[in-house]
Length: 118
Image (tube, rainbow, N blue to C red; front, side):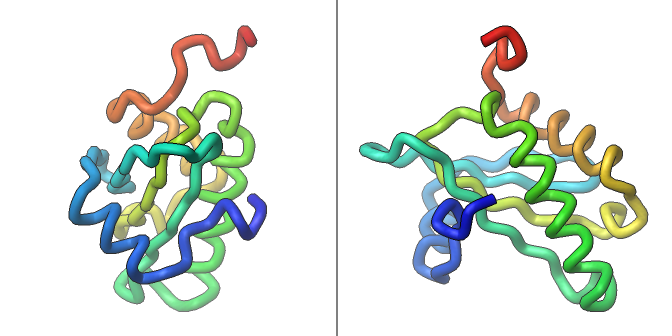
């Protein structure tokens, strides 16, 4: 995931939290905020210290970024997303993280229907 596709500023995070809509499953909460005049999507990640030590938190963030890199053709462009990891995400491997993220993005209707057939 390129650095320019990430949300880094607190102001941007707060805008997504206050104006965006949220959807969740047991492992992740995703906030989505539509942005006009943006033809790509941006990702912000939040993994609390309650989840584990730095190694665990960084591993979860790597898994989330890689999952979204693989799903990038299916994710709706023009939105900002903030993904918050919950405690059960600490024990998950990459494939479980990808599966759970795919599920929560389908719940939020931000995945295109025919992502694989394009």
